Image (cartoon, rainbow, N blue to C red; front, top):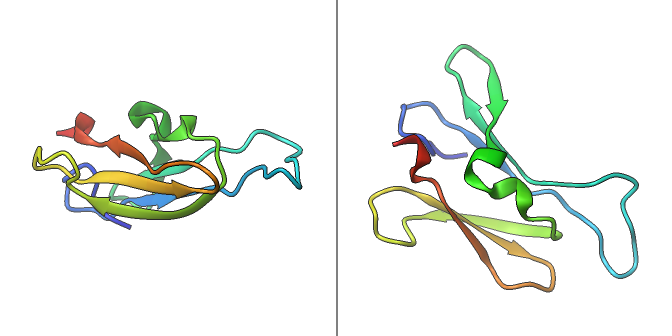
Length: 92
């Protein structure tokens, strides 16, 4: 959990497991980023920041300002791939 849009509400990022050479998924899998609306509801905004296009097997996530722009970014560690970084400045 982190406040990706700077509104003071904690948002949720979820990495989805996925296909491996030894197992195929029945349906497409994708990651999710849920923006906290502040009223007990969340909306998935992963497509807006490009997090949904990561289709690899998610193993971990790190949140930091990787590009020094003053906004927190998402880095996911995936099975058999290099880390993927999504900048989250879209909400600022």
